[in-house]
Image (cartoon, rainbow, N blue to C red; front, side):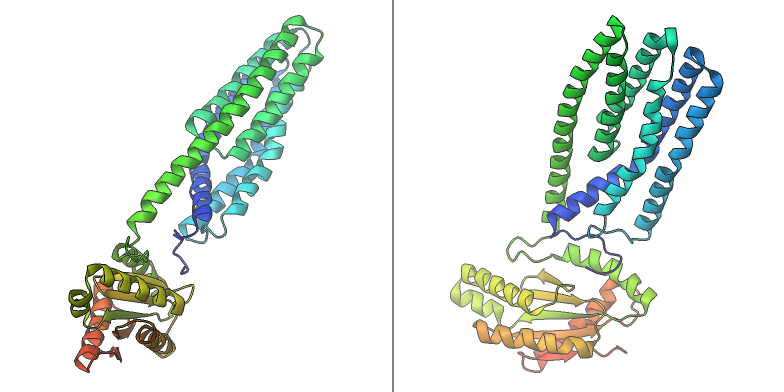
Length: 367
Protein backbone atom coordinates (compact mmCIF):
# COMPACT_ATOMS: atom_id res chain seq x y z
CA UNK A 1 0.00 0.00 0.00
CA UNK A 2 1.51 3.32 -1.08
CA UNK A 3 1.33 6.67 0.71
CA UNK A 4 -1.87 8.36 -0.38
CA UNK A 5 -3.55 5.13 -1.50
CA UNK A 6 -5.96 4.32 1.30
CA UNK A 7 -7.68 1.38 -0.39
CA UNK A 8 -6.42 -1.88 1.05
CA UNK A 9 -9.11 -4.29 -0.11
CA UNK A 10 -7.34 -7.40 1.10
CA UNK A 11 -7.84 -6.45 4.74
CA UNK A 12 -11.59 -6.79 5.09
CA UNK A 13 -11.97 -5.83 8.74
CA UNK A 14 -9.90 -2.66 8.43
CA UNK A 15 -11.76 -1.60 5.30
CA UNK A 16 -15.15 -2.12 6.97
CA UNK A 17 -14.05 0.00 9.95
CA UNK A 18 -12.76 2.67 7.57
CA UNK A 19 -16.10 2.91 5.74
CA UNK A 20 -18.07 3.03 8.99
CA UNK A 21 -15.93 5.64 10.75
CA UNK A 22 -15.68 7.88 7.69
CA UNK A 23 -19.49 7.70 7.44
CA UNK A 24 -19.75 8.75 11.09
CA UNK A 25 -17.58 11.83 10.62
CA UNK A 26 -19.18 12.71 7.27
CA UNK A 27 -22.61 12.88 8.98
CA UNK A 28 -21.30 14.95 11.90
CA UNK A 29 -22.73 18.24 10.58
CA UNK A 30 -26.21 16.72 10.39
CA UNK A 31 -26.04 15.30 13.92
CA UNK A 32 -24.59 18.54 15.33
CA UNK A 33 -27.43 20.58 13.83
CA UNK A 34 -29.90 18.22 15.50
CA UNK A 35 -28.22 18.68 18.88
CA UNK A 36 -28.05 22.46 18.42
CA UNK A 37 -31.77 22.59 17.66
CA UNK A 38 -32.50 20.47 20.75
CA UNK A 39 -30.34 22.76 22.92
CA UNK A 40 -32.22 25.82 21.69
CA UNK A 41 -35.66 24.33 22.33
CA UNK A 42 -34.65 22.80 25.66
CA UNK A 43 -33.18 26.18 26.63
CA UNK A 44 -36.55 27.75 25.91
CA UNK A 45 -38.15 25.03 28.05
CA UNK A 46 -35.75 25.65 30.95
CA UNK A 47 -36.44 29.36 30.68
CA UNK A 48 -40.17 28.68 30.89
CA UNK A 49 -40.15 26.00 33.59
CA UNK A 50 -37.35 27.36 35.77
CA UNK A 51 -35.14 30.40 34.98
CA UNK A 52 -33.96 32.27 31.93
CA UNK A 53 -30.43 33.00 33.29
CA UNK A 54 -30.01 29.31 34.15
CA UNK A 55 -31.21 28.37 30.68
CA UNK A 56 -28.62 30.65 29.09
CA UNK A 57 -25.83 29.28 31.29
CA UNK A 58 -26.82 25.66 30.61
CA UNK A 59 -27.08 26.18 26.84
CA UNK A 60 -23.74 28.04 26.77
CA UNK A 61 -21.97 25.26 28.70
CA UNK A 62 -23.35 22.59 26.36
CA UNK A 63 -22.31 24.52 23.24
CA UNK A 64 -18.81 25.21 24.62
CA UNK A 65 -18.27 21.54 25.54
CA UNK A 66 -19.23 20.59 21.98
CA UNK A 67 -16.28 22.59 20.61
CA UNK A 68 -13.79 19.68 21.01
CA UNK A 69 -16.16 17.43 19.00
CA UNK A 70 -16.41 20.02 16.23
CA UNK A 71 -12.63 20.52 16.25
CA UNK A 72 -12.09 16.76 16.08
CA UNK A 73 -14.43 16.46 13.08
CA UNK A 74 -12.61 19.29 11.27
CA UNK A 75 -9.21 17.71 11.93
CA UNK A 76 -10.45 14.31 10.73
CA UNK A 77 -11.92 15.78 7.53
CA UNK A 78 -8.72 17.65 6.68
CA UNK A 79 -6.53 14.63 7.35
CA UNK A 80 -8.85 12.50 5.22
CA UNK A 81 -8.62 15.01 2.37
CA UNK A 82 -4.83 14.95 2.64
CA UNK A 83 -5.07 11.12 2.61
CA UNK A 84 -3.32 10.88 5.97
CA UNK A 85 -6.11 8.67 7.35
CA UNK A 86 -6.16 5.14 5.99
CA UNK A 87 -7.81 1.85 6.98
CA UNK A 88 -4.63 1.08 8.92
CA UNK A 89 -4.87 4.06 11.29
CA UNK A 90 -8.57 5.00 11.34
CA UNK A 91 -9.71 2.88 14.31
CA UNK A 92 -8.54 5.24 17.12
CA UNK A 93 -10.65 8.02 15.61
CA UNK A 94 -13.83 6.25 16.66
CA UNK A 95 -12.64 6.27 20.28
CA UNK A 96 -11.58 9.90 19.94
CA UNK A 97 -15.19 10.65 18.96
CA UNK A 98 -16.54 8.74 21.95
CA UNK A 99 -14.15 10.43 24.43
CA UNK A 100 -14.91 13.87 23.00
CA UNK A 101 -18.63 13.19 23.54
CA UNK A 102 -18.60 12.28 27.24
CA UNK A 103 -18.44 15.80 28.70
CA UNK A 104 -20.97 17.42 26.31
CA UNK A 105 -23.42 14.55 26.79
CA UNK A 106 -23.13 14.83 30.59
CA UNK A 107 -23.69 18.59 30.38
CA UNK A 108 -26.65 18.04 28.08
CA UNK A 109 -28.18 15.50 30.51
CA UNK A 110 -27.73 17.89 33.46
CA UNK A 111 -30.87 19.72 32.31
CA UNK A 112 -32.85 16.84 33.82
CA UNK A 113 -31.63 17.59 37.36
CA UNK A 114 -32.53 21.28 37.55
CA UNK A 115 -34.93 22.12 40.43
CA UNK A 116 -38.15 22.67 38.47
CA UNK A 117 -40.28 22.50 41.67
CA UNK A 118 -43.99 22.39 40.74
CA UNK A 119 -43.09 22.25 37.02
CA UNK A 120 -41.03 19.06 37.36
CA UNK A 121 -43.60 16.80 35.70
CA UNK A 122 -43.99 19.00 32.62
CA UNK A 123 -40.26 19.74 32.42
CA UNK A 124 -39.21 16.07 32.51
CA UNK A 125 -41.79 15.18 29.91
CA UNK A 126 -40.48 18.05 27.78
CA UNK A 127 -36.89 16.77 28.17
CA UNK A 128 -37.95 13.22 27.36
CA UNK A 129 -39.51 14.30 24.07
CA UNK A 130 -36.28 15.91 22.84
CA UNK A 131 -34.00 13.12 24.04
CA UNK A 132 -36.17 10.53 22.27
CA UNK A 133 -36.25 12.71 19.14
CA UNK A 134 -32.44 12.96 19.10
CA UNK A 135 -31.96 9.22 19.61
CA UNK A 136 -34.61 8.42 16.98
CA UNK A 137 -33.07 10.87 14.51
CA UNK A 138 -29.61 9.36 14.90
CA UNK A 139 -31.16 5.87 14.79
CA UNK A 140 -33.08 6.45 11.54
CA UNK A 141 -30.41 8.51 9.77
CA UNK A 142 -27.55 6.32 11.05
CA UNK A 143 -25.84 9.63 11.68
CA UNK A 144 -23.41 8.51 14.37
CA UNK A 145 -21.29 5.59 15.48
CA UNK A 146 -22.68 2.84 17.67
CA UNK A 147 -20.36 3.87 20.51
CA UNK A 148 -21.45 7.53 20.49
CA UNK A 149 -25.14 6.64 20.08
CA UNK A 150 -25.07 4.19 22.98
CA UNK A 151 -23.18 6.72 25.11
CA UNK A 152 -25.85 9.38 24.47
CA UNK A 153 -28.65 6.88 25.09
CA UNK A 154 -27.16 5.61 28.35
CA UNK A 155 -26.33 9.02 29.83
CA UNK A 156 -29.60 10.74 28.95
CA UNK A 157 -32.06 7.89 29.43
CA UNK A 158 -30.52 6.84 32.73
CA UNK A 159 -30.63 10.46 33.91
CA UNK A 160 -34.32 10.73 32.99
CA UNK A 161 -35.11 7.36 34.59
CA UNK A 162 -33.27 8.26 37.81
CA UNK A 163 -35.00 11.65 38.15
CA UNK A 164 -38.45 10.23 37.29
CA UNK A 165 -38.23 7.39 39.82
CA UNK A 166 -36.70 9.64 42.48
CA UNK A 167 -39.66 12.02 42.54
CA UNK A 168 -42.62 11.26 44.79
CA UNK A 169 -45.03 11.66 41.92
CA UNK A 170 -47.07 8.77 40.52
CA UNK A 171 -47.12 10.08 36.94
CA UNK A 172 -43.36 10.66 36.99
CA UNK A 173 -42.86 7.13 38.35
CA UNK A 174 -44.98 5.81 35.46
CA UNK A 175 -42.82 7.85 33.08
CA UNK A 176 -39.72 6.28 34.65
CA UNK A 177 -41.06 2.74 34.09
CA UNK A 178 -41.99 3.65 30.50
CA UNK A 179 -38.48 5.01 29.96
CA UNK A 180 -36.97 1.76 31.26
CA UNK A 181 -39.03 -0.23 28.74
CA UNK A 182 -38.13 2.22 25.99
CA UNK A 183 -34.46 2.06 26.95
CA UNK A 184 -34.40 -1.74 26.66
CA UNK A 185 -36.27 -1.73 23.32
CA UNK A 186 -34.15 1.07 21.84
CA UNK A 187 -30.93 -0.64 22.91
CA UNK A 188 -31.98 -3.85 21.16
CA UNK A 189 -33.04 -1.99 18.01
CA UNK A 190 -29.85 0.07 17.88
CA UNK A 191 -27.74 -3.07 18.09
CA UNK A 192 -29.83 -4.64 15.30
CA UNK A 193 -29.38 -1.51 13.21
CA UNK A 194 -25.64 -1.60 13.80
CA UNK A 195 -25.48 -5.20 12.57
CA UNK A 196 -27.58 -4.33 9.51
CA UNK A 197 -25.38 -1.32 8.74
CA UNK A 198 -22.25 -3.44 9.07
CA UNK A 199 -23.74 -6.05 6.73
CA UNK A 200 -24.58 -3.35 4.16
CA UNK A 201 -21.03 -2.01 4.27
CA UNK A 202 -19.77 -5.59 4.03
CA UNK A 203 -21.82 -6.24 0.88
CA UNK A 204 -20.57 -2.96 -0.61
CA UNK A 205 -17.03 -3.98 0.25
CA UNK A 206 -17.44 -7.43 -1.35
CA UNK A 207 -18.90 -5.96 -4.53
CA UNK A 208 -16.10 -3.41 -4.87
CA UNK A 209 -13.46 -5.97 -3.95
CA UNK A 210 -14.57 -8.41 -6.65
CA UNK A 211 -14.56 -5.67 -9.29
CA UNK A 212 -10.79 -5.30 -8.77
CA UNK A 213 -9.87 -9.00 -8.69
CA UNK A 214 -9.03 -11.34 -11.57
CA UNK A 215 -11.27 -14.38 -10.97
CA UNK A 216 -8.79 -16.97 -12.30
CA UNK A 217 -5.56 -15.97 -10.57
CA UNK A 218 -6.99 -13.93 -7.66
CA UNK A 219 -4.50 -11.18 -8.54
CA UNK A 220 -5.47 -7.56 -8.99
CA UNK A 221 -6.85 -6.72 -12.43
CA UNK A 222 -6.11 -3.87 -14.83
CA UNK A 223 -8.82 -1.68 -13.35
CA UNK A 224 -7.08 -1.82 -9.96
CA UNK A 225 -3.72 -1.21 -11.64
CA UNK A 226 -4.84 2.07 -13.19
CA UNK A 227 -6.41 3.22 -9.93
CA UNK A 228 -3.13 2.42 -8.15
CA UNK A 229 -0.98 4.21 -10.75
CA UNK A 230 -3.27 7.24 -10.84
CA UNK A 231 -2.39 7.74 -7.18
CA UNK A 232 1.21 6.57 -7.31
CA UNK A 233 2.34 8.88 -10.14
CA UNK A 234 1.34 12.16 -8.40
CA UNK A 235 2.83 10.83 -5.13
CA UNK A 236 6.09 10.04 -6.94
CA UNK A 237 6.21 13.53 -8.44
CA UNK A 238 5.59 15.20 -5.06
CA UNK A 239 8.16 13.11 -3.19
CA UNK A 240 10.63 12.92 -6.09
CA UNK A 241 10.93 9.18 -5.45
CA UNK A 242 11.04 6.77 -8.40
CA UNK A 243 9.02 3.63 -8.87
CA UNK A 244 9.39 0.76 -11.30
CA UNK A 245 7.16 -1.74 -13.01
CA UNK A 246 7.83 -5.12 -14.58
CA UNK A 247 5.72 -6.25 -17.53
CA UNK A 248 5.88 -10.05 -17.85
CA UNK A 249 4.71 -12.29 -20.68
CA UNK A 250 4.60 -16.10 -20.76
CA UNK A 251 6.71 -17.41 -23.66
CA UNK A 252 4.89 -19.56 -26.25
CA UNK A 253 1.74 -19.65 -24.15
CA UNK A 254 -0.53 -20.26 -27.16
CA UNK A 255 1.53 -23.26 -28.10
CA UNK A 256 1.33 -24.58 -24.52
CA UNK A 257 -2.42 -24.03 -24.51
CA UNK A 258 -2.90 -25.83 -27.83
CA UNK A 259 -0.76 -28.75 -26.71
CA UNK A 260 -2.02 -29.27 -23.16
CA UNK A 261 -5.52 -27.77 -23.28
CA UNK A 262 -7.16 -24.71 -21.79
CA UNK A 263 -7.52 -26.21 -18.30
CA UNK A 264 -3.77 -26.82 -18.16
CA UNK A 265 -3.23 -23.28 -19.43
CA UNK A 266 -5.37 -21.90 -16.61
CA UNK A 267 -3.44 -23.97 -14.06
CA UNK A 268 -0.18 -22.64 -15.49
CA UNK A 269 -1.34 -19.04 -15.11
CA UNK A 270 -2.36 -19.79 -11.52
CA UNK A 271 1.07 -21.33 -10.80
CA UNK A 272 2.84 -18.29 -12.26
CA UNK A 273 0.63 -16.03 -10.16
CA UNK A 274 1.81 -17.83 -7.03
CA UNK A 275 5.41 -17.32 -8.06
CA UNK A 276 4.81 -13.60 -8.55
CA UNK A 277 3.23 -13.26 -5.11
CA UNK A 278 6.03 -15.24 -3.46
CA UNK A 279 8.77 -13.17 -5.09
CA UNK A 280 7.18 -9.73 -4.69
CA UNK A 281 7.20 -7.55 -1.60
CA UNK A 282 4.25 -6.57 0.57
CA UNK A 283 4.14 -3.03 -0.84
CA UNK A 284 4.20 -4.20 -4.48
CA UNK A 285 1.08 -4.48 -6.62
CA UNK A 286 0.87 -7.75 -8.59
CA UNK A 287 -1.56 -7.63 -11.51
CA UNK A 288 -2.84 -9.94 -14.21
CA UNK A 289 -2.52 -7.42 -17.02
CA UNK A 290 -4.39 -9.50 -19.58
CA UNK A 291 -4.24 -12.98 -21.11
CA UNK A 292 -0.79 -14.35 -20.32
CA UNK A 293 0.65 -10.95 -19.34
CA UNK A 294 1.36 -9.90 -15.75
CA UNK A 295 2.68 -6.75 -14.14
CA UNK A 296 4.42 -5.96 -10.86
CA UNK A 297 4.44 -2.33 -9.71
CA UNK A 298 7.13 -1.48 -7.14
CA UNK A 299 6.77 1.84 -5.29
CA UNK A 300 9.93 3.79 -4.30
CA UNK A 301 12.12 1.39 -6.29
CA UNK A 302 14.68 2.12 -9.02
CA UNK A 303 15.37 -0.23 -11.92
CA UNK A 304 18.64 -1.23 -10.26
CA UNK A 305 16.75 -2.25 -7.15
CA UNK A 306 13.96 -3.93 -9.13
CA UNK A 307 16.19 -5.95 -11.44
CA UNK A 308 17.08 -8.70 -8.89
CA UNK A 309 13.38 -9.22 -8.16
CA UNK A 310 12.57 -9.44 -11.87
CA UNK A 311 15.39 -11.93 -12.42
CA UNK A 312 14.21 -13.97 -9.42
CA UNK A 313 10.71 -14.15 -10.90
CA UNK A 314 12.08 -15.26 -14.26
CA UNK A 315 14.30 -17.93 -12.69
CA UNK A 316 11.57 -19.18 -10.34
CA UNK A 317 9.05 -19.56 -13.16
CA UNK A 318 11.58 -21.49 -15.22
CA UNK A 319 12.40 -23.74 -12.27
CA UNK A 320 8.86 -24.49 -11.08
CA UNK A 321 6.83 -24.59 -14.32
CA UNK A 322 7.15 -25.98 -17.83
CA UNK A 323 7.49 -22.56 -19.45
CA UNK A 324 9.67 -19.47 -19.38
CA UNK A 325 8.79 -15.79 -19.23
CA UNK A 326 10.14 -12.62 -20.80
CA UNK A 327 10.05 -9.30 -18.97
CA UNK A 328 10.38 -5.59 -19.60
CA UNK A 329 11.43 -3.35 -16.72
CA UNK A 330 10.68 0.38 -16.71
CA UNK A 331 11.22 3.19 -14.23
CA UNK A 332 8.93 6.19 -13.86
CA UNK A 333 10.50 9.10 -15.73
CA UNK A 334 7.90 11.83 -15.25
CA UNK A 335 5.44 10.55 -17.86
CA UNK A 336 2.29 12.60 -18.20
CA UNK A 337 0.03 9.55 -18.34
CA UNK A 338 -0.10 5.96 -17.14
CA UNK A 339 -0.30 4.68 -20.72
CA UNK A 340 3.01 6.34 -21.65
CA UNK A 341 4.76 4.60 -18.76
CA UNK A 342 3.25 1.22 -19.63
CA UNK A 343 4.22 1.64 -23.30
CA UNK A 344 7.88 2.06 -22.34
CA UNK A 345 7.78 -1.16 -20.33
CA UNK A 346 6.00 -2.85 -23.24
CA UNK A 347 8.76 -1.81 -25.65
CA UNK A 348 11.32 -3.33 -23.26
CA UNK A 349 9.25 -6.55 -23.16
CA UNK A 350 9.17 -6.62 -26.97
CA UNK A 351 12.96 -6.24 -26.99
CA UNK A 352 13.21 -9.24 -24.62
CA UNK A 353 11.08 -11.30 -27.00
CA UNK A 354 13.24 -10.25 -29.92
CA UNK A 355 16.36 -11.22 -27.97
CA UNK A 356 15.23 -14.85 -27.81
CA UNK A 357 12.79 -14.88 -24.88
CA UNK A 358 13.45 -16.06 -21.28
CA UNK A 359 15.23 -12.79 -20.62
CA UNK A 360 14.83 -9.35 -19.07
CA UNK A 361 15.27 -6.01 -20.80
CA UNK A 362 15.32 -2.58 -19.14
CA UNK A 363 13.57 0.33 -20.83
CA UNK A 364 15.63 3.37 -21.72
CA UNK A 365 14.44 6.30 -19.58
CA UNK A 366 14.98 8.64 -22.56
CA UNK A 367 12.61 6.73 -24.86
